[in-house]
Length: 106
View (cartoon, helix red, strand yellow):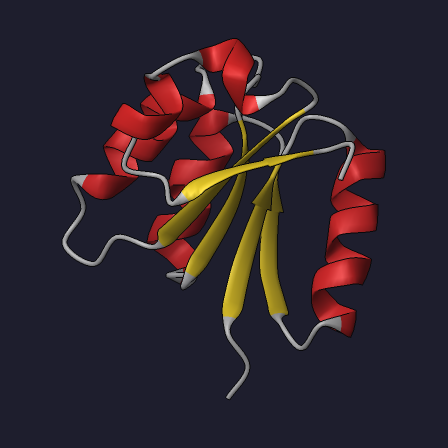
C-alpha cells in the first residue's frame, strides 16, 4: 500500500508540481486543500499519513494547522513548505510538531 498524502497550498501550480513529484515517488495523493479549513477537513475525511503543508495560508498559518493536527487522535506526519528558508522562521520550526521544513526552491 502506498503512503497517503494531503497537499496544502494556496497556489494551484505548486500543488500540481508537488502532486506529480509525490505520485512519481510512490505516494498516493488523496486530497488537496488551499487553506487551513480545507486542510483540517481533508485530514478528518481522508486520514492521510503525511501532510505537505505550506506555512503561508490565507486563513491560518501552517504552524497553527500543524498544532491543531498534532492534537488529533491519530496525527499525520507534517512537513512544512515555504518559499522562505527555515532560518526566516527562527525557532518556530523547531518548536512546531512538524517533522521539518522543505523550502520550495529545493
